[in-house]
Length: 339
Image 1 (tube, rainbow, N blue to C red):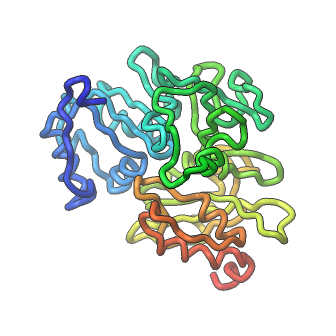
Image 2: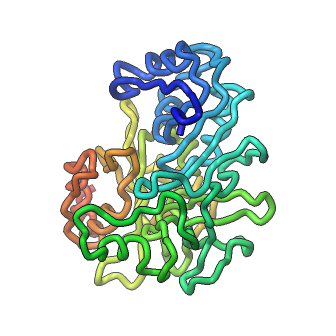
């Protein structure tokens, strides 16, 4: 898209964390980047390391847009990004899919930006919000499934190695016949018309019948970014469980320890910021959080593992060995005793 409109595409060879974050940010500033594509994970790391781009790196005078995707961009991170790079930039939160090579919801310079919200639906995409029965509920303020109800310009014809089309159908069309279901849990704000991705719909947390997305938990955890390096929140429901339990796993930053006091602070912040029903049943420290090769947390695999299902990591997992860390939590009572 950038090349098609005559833009100069600037590539950074290697990880933005190598040799360090200031080097990468200086590269962005020195190359006069106007549109920076990044992820919440990257921005969270800049915040966590205490780096202040406008103070420590440069003025970023040419930067116009910071476009963020790959995970939920929380309201606190919206505010920090605006402060970190300057009031002159537009923060664009977008969400799409690899298989469609595009975004379903995105930003526009023609509408106001509200912290934590995606501005609008993408052009050419008939995006709606469905309940489990296939009714459009977007103007009710209730969360539901992100669907696309008409064929779109980049609709894939098939999956490679799927001659019958069964894998393709099961991935996107099995829930609503003839309607593309992306698998994201989304809600529209009736007041602002902004959209919020709450997490993956197959990873929706549902303790005692209260449905909410992991993104809501991550939003509260932003206040602990100087202490927590990362986190992942999943539901656990084993065959013997009458109800689902919410488990929160946290990875500590170097030099910080996970304590009972910190656990209490996290639960109190979630209770205050959301509600008592959002508070995880258990919080555990782990050494690593599983990610896909394109930087997305792998909540579903962790949910399956702690619920008693053996998972074979696919080639899309960047750190497959990390999944082994979660098997001990399927026997929750034993894990608590050990800890």
